[in-house]
Image 1 (cartoon, rainbow, N blue to C red):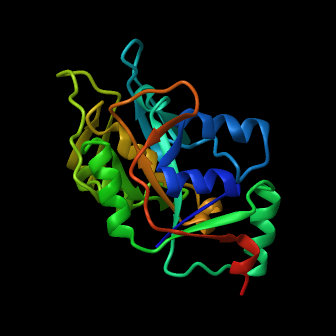
Image 2: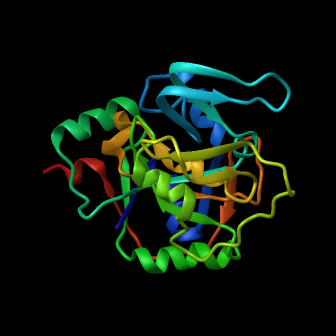
Length: 244
């Protein structure tokens, strides 16, 4: 099931009118700079990893090696990608500690919208965004792990998705996997056709949020924007009723 936390009036507009309020990806980075960690994430929408040795080759500059580096970056084309967040869970119930954390981080979020039929909701999204919405769970890790790496190489949206086209020979960076003998196993160039996949990783600090994300890589927005799907069935309750 999916859960959306928020204010009652906005959640009602979500399921009764089909109003989905998307924010540009970069907004979540800016939120951590101005508010408490947990509301925003300075690494949102980008790759963050530690390596014993990194090879950096800027397009306009001299290539160089960096040892014991921690690197984080966001691709330019993802900065203004419309982003919508839900919670994906097997149970709606939360612990007292989760309730306290949620209340502290999001004091205006008093209600929860319970969406039990995941398939119908996602089909609603797919249809109204004309196969141009990419939907998937978030991977939680502080380093670049094999499951997220596999997602970058071969992962796909949970709903049918027409990926954007990318200019030939123009890419943002390249992911290269090597074995212990330093032999390249595979490599992947990140460009406008697949850069949206970098938006599906967050640090372990955020793991309890169990986030599921819907992004619109074909569109760009500079501020929060409402898009509409069809109304759907859901249950609106106060968050405190989820305490167990």
